Length: 401
Ligand code: C5P
Image (cartoon, rainbow, N blue to C red):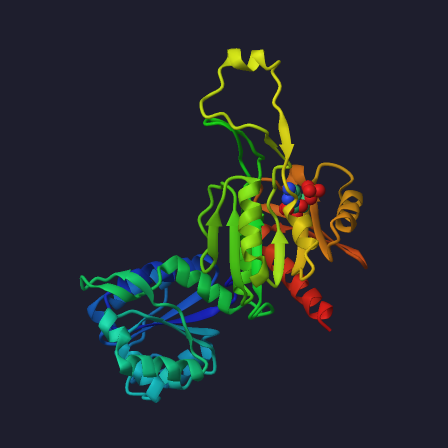
């Protein structure tokens, strides 16, 4: 995956101990295909040397406004114009104040003032400095000026205190930087997603489940967040890490998933049901492990009870959100998908071949709505998720006209 191919990111570093994490961020940005041009304030060089950043980015680092290495001797213009995005990490309280005021007394503040590219800031400072009335005034000004703030988050701080002011982790900064380049087609929408398998216990060590990995649902959660939505993800057991920026609930059984969905459905604009919900559960869950001899006594059979159909129940609500279903089939994919869409009364159903897609990194989705069947081709699940989110956003707009 190269989400930042052909992008030049100007990485501005100001004075703060979080500089050490930015070395890692520079690596991650390049792994995604970006060229990284580092500019440091004098204070930043107290925490990390320009040598480190030059070695990591493969480009000379700029610090001084009078640096004559640019041909026209105007590094603030040259560097600013090369950038598709300016990311300030870490951003000190002092530097936030400078940008809020429009000061330009060193190379970094001057090129920020001269920018014609979007500006992202990752604040990092002591909790009292973050909460100070002056800093909060500056935050308001910066937001009003169209600056995007990434964090800070709460937690233990290098100074020994605890609270808001920690810089986001490099991986989360990377997600936010990538997200900033995605179209905001679901801004303000509340999206609820189910993902993964469910697990229906037979006894304390056995259960009924499926080979669903949760990858598609988690990718859709990330893509919806990138598109500006407020995202809630309800997941069965998976080995995946919780997607950044998403409210997350972990459940085990279909009934628990049903309850969790129904508890949130009134606050939902779009419901995307990706989970491979078990259609059946054992009628009785044994408290202790069933012995082989007990199984023989029961004629080796397991009595089953049908689980609620979560998607069908949501789709039948009088005030239902926009509902998107999934269908993983092993044969007659298109035909079954068409039938399922009508049976569950859905505006959109997404079908794929279970044998190709379950557990895999890529997928081959087929979008089935009232008007057409649209194949989107084989691609990574994240790419497919972004495509699907755009398709949903377009249909959502049409459905409200
Ligand atoms: O036909 P089937 O029930 O397998 O349809 C699959 C779709 O229905 C998926 O979107 C799945 O998340 C949803 N589903 C559900 N509750 C069930 C079974 C399936 O929400 N009990």
